[in-house]
Image 1 (cartoon, one colour):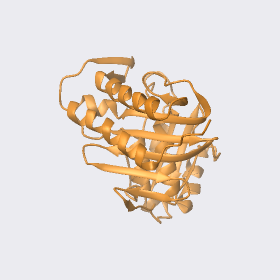
Image 2 (cartoon, helix red, strand yellow):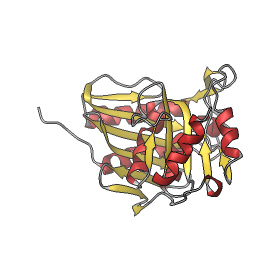
Image 3 (cartoon, helix red, strand yellow):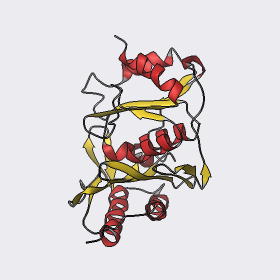
Length: 261
């Protein structure tokens, strides 16, 4: 049986299709359920994911999918999709226009393709392994900033912040006192893409899921950045996971701050 592999154009088309679902639903009343005390899900998350899973099943049958709302689809362990149908649901339900669709494709344990689409700005970030990273077709690169004091960072906080003392507040304070500032946008996928595009100098976060960071992580790598977990290991996909992304010169300095006693 011949292996069917997607192209970057396939992922871009799917992300734009899901993004249109998000855009059309934006600003309307939604049916909101909670997966945790501060972790909402809406019917739009589910509709976007249904569209993406149906498209993958039709065009690439038998491939495994790891997805946020349904858990995904069983299939070939060599070809794996990471699907986040709405990254930034809290923003979405509060009518804050910062959210995205995130899609990544992995083959034989290596991320090959990644797309993150922001439907409100019509910004499509994309990357192909060993080919580069782009924003709406224009190549992007990470910054060359070397010093913490010259850097602008971005981060996020886990959904169990109320219950778990390992909630990133200590790291947030460390960087706030060492940098130009620390932002919190509410979409891990966009955080990574903004690092790739040179809008932020670095990003870190703890206790995420693979579908949050797979596409954005590849996009940073292909934009010339380094992406690891906070122990400096290459695996930023496996759970329990963490992530650090920055240009090569700044990355080590971020790790020093995170690993300081």
